Image (cartoon, rainbow, N blue to C red; front, top):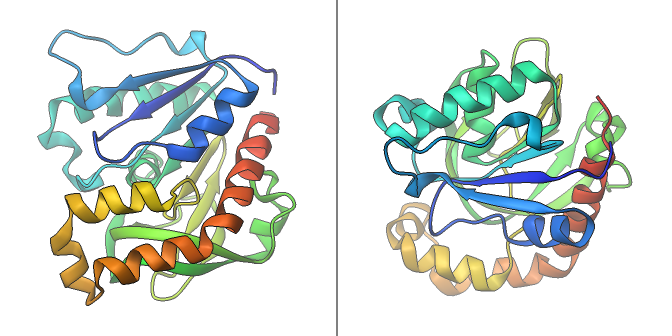
Length: 235
């Protein structure tokens, strides 16, 4: 893919794209739109201005898009991107929204995942250009209750336990439920913003932050590789 301008769509004030945004800025020009703060009447930029898109997380369920004005507008915008064929990467709820746009369900994960985990790339995942050069077993950070199904015609790229569906590919879309872009500073911010989530999984703040710190060096390397791979995807 040519080194054009990339649009990052941030959907929550607490949860940004962290290392993904930083590594994008090392390679290309990046615009960030804070969709959650868009006032009535504001519009998303033309899709023709960008060569690829990244959609960030939010604690709002992907099944509740219609209850939020900014997400309703974003849904229409993402629909045009998906139909237009340019590469688009969705992270956590961003990936769930894109999965729904592609005709997949978003359902409850068998269990909530918060903290450090390992996900496993499938054979299709190892062969997918987004994960070129990745190990089969990937250390990740999680903070989610829902999960996507693989969209019709799509491919399962990564699986895990307890959440069996961790990443998918479908045409120009890649969706991830997990985070590589998080470091301990951002994990601490999430823990402060969502303390009830820690109670729900029976983990302490210190435990979750320790799990992030333990995985942080390798996650940083893989986050950089993922962004490099994303920028090289051709459609």
